[in-house]
Image (cartoon, rainbow, N blue to C red; front, side, top):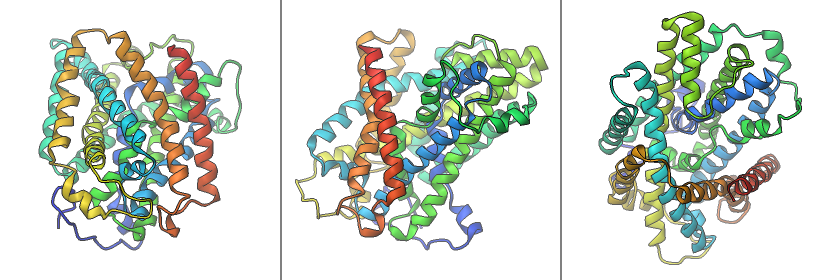
Length: 432
């Protein structure tokens, strides 16, 4: 039985009973975790560790709780509303779709080049005979072919394998540098050293927090989860994904604290190359090579997840844009979403092309200033937009009663809205 959202109506599978059976169903959360954590996020965490040691570990835990709350809210919307995320936004007014459409086009163009470049850097470090930009293009083409021709189940297996490589490389590196266990446990006690406020906000709000969070519900639909009966399964899956993210982040903070204390770590993806060189100098080439393979897995998994997940979002944006006006109480059938949009649709495939080929031009140029400003401004607004709209939608009659937010979800989503709103204002001030 296919669970691919390109094949019309899909019979809903039986909900697994028991932890073992549920563990075998876990997948969309791992997709979200692997997609949301990029090489730049790990470098930012490593920088925080190099400057403040273990002191900011508590911020990783707070950030994980916030991401679990957001991911759970996205999944709950899909399972209990009878609508996709884009259809929910459509009920708030066409302005939402205008914002998302512009953001998706600009973001996709800039991110396409960024993701390909990040994937090419470690391959160039391993095989320097080929220039970074050509490795980047090859990675982009590999992601393009995988997502264009593969069903969700295949992509999920590839992403799970990449997460396994990431786990061995990142956590293995943290074990290699021999963490101070006493200081590690002390780091879970909230403290705010002088000058650390920006890094705290970055750890709480930055890792795994992008447009891809909105794709989570589409992956649950591709998995065959289509009603409130799947709420407990979705919550386990979502929590597993973001706990995995937290393990990566804690590991990189430990590496920064133990290996790079006092070093001036380079910002961006190049910072991980610097870490690879430091590992080679301290432990030998045998430590550098698996780390660079892990670095590639981190970057390429983000590329594949975006090529699939954001293309699904964009395809649904186009479908939703063309829907006739409907009232708040009228919910579409999710089976209708399966038929008219999703994997295999012309818009889905067109967006994969947009992510892959036009951004290759940016690999030969510095990013144009106006494009960078537009990308930064639209991106800064997305996370508070997601938190705010979820807070509104999940407290309305757009969802069945079992899907409405309780006090815990409302509190966490409100805190997310405040945090990401502050970060957005700070980002916009920095840009302009």
